[in-house]
Image 1 (cartoon, rainbow, N blue to C red):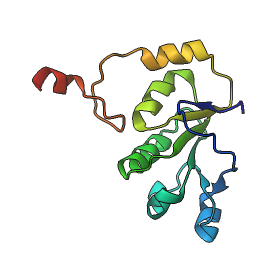
Image 2 (cartoon, rainbow, N blue to C red; image 1 turned 90 degrees about the vertical axis):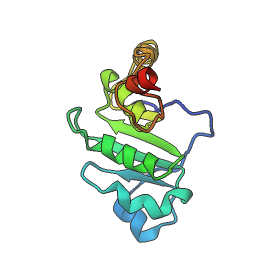
Image 3 (cartoon, rainbow, N blue to C red; image 1 turned 45 degrees about the horizontal axis):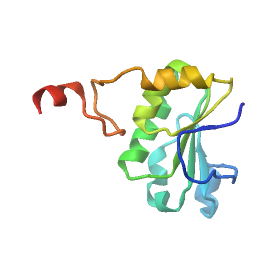
Length: 141
């Protein structure tokens, strides 16, 4: 794994993330890691205490992490939301739309290509956590 890429201006969270099971047993950690298939809704009562939630993507085709991010952001989580694992360049804009603001990919990502990927589409078709207005909303007010 390479260093995390952060799209946030706040202080970097240094505490290692504990597993969801460990967090629920001790509940004093401020960073937690959700593995694929775990229910992000279990964290909802604790969102105000968490500085970092890391969501694992074990394979590029496993999209469960997108749902976890959407659930957490819709519930009001404002801390760092980091996608880790098999995170690929062509997924970044979709991950960003779901609320991820940090990435810890298994393989390095070129920063110039990342910026290009994140800025590629001026208009979007679906509403999501990033609060951008979808194209139909722009057309029809």
